[in-house]
Image 1: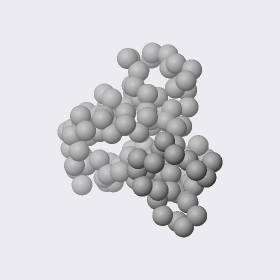
Image 2 (image 1 turned 30 degrees about the vertical axis):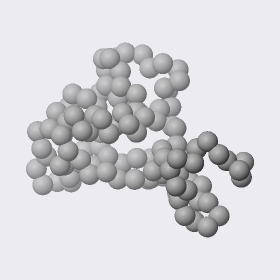
Image 3 (image 1 turned 90 degrees about the vertical axis):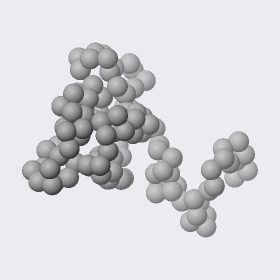
Image 4 (image 1 turned 45 degrees about the vertical axis):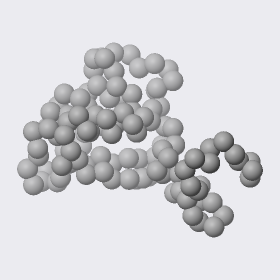
Length: 114
């Protein structure tokens, strides 16, 4: 599978700006974003081949990766472990509710069980 020029531009020009985002080149593999937990457990794989460079940048920032101004810019303390915040899509994996269903969105104000 050929790499799209969009993905290639992201890899060569954008990845160096993101803290904690690393490129592993697998020959012949479609480019995917693999999200790992702090324990290096694989949480999710997102295929990138059909996305534009802009969409990939947006995705990575939504996931909480910190984008630096330049590759050598310092990373603020609070972003040293970014994206260590739990991702909403991954919560069911880490904390299943009693009946195993994902709680509906929009219940963030009330936590009767806390």
